Length: 160
Image (tube, rainbow, N blue to C red; front, side, top):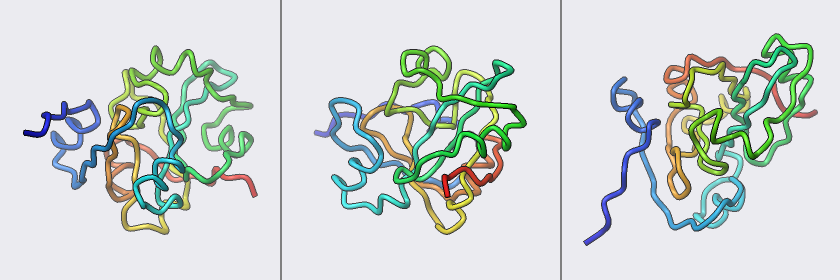
């Protein structure tokens, strides 16, 4: 008999809001980046999105969701967030700030409602794949559903 998988905050929020999504569980022992996971599972790495947590010059925290294959342009991210500058949150602070661990971080259901920005490349897909809130868990949903669940907005975040 298969082991029952526990729901994450992200899954609970999507269910409470009756937002369409699918969940996929897979074996994962430790942190692996979005591209490696996509390749391991036979998924399109361009459709697999990572969540990057940042802190602005003001001290505010922001979640940026972008293709796992892409690099984030910090100037574009700062502009989207209305900050003078922005930097990636140190890995050791991710759990305390978000409630999620590295590799299991998703913009849905963090400890606080941080501003969320989804890279505009997500509009190219009917469905994107994001972390489900823990290692070994993915959520498949439309980009618009992700924004509805998080109160987020589209932004140009990638390096040129």
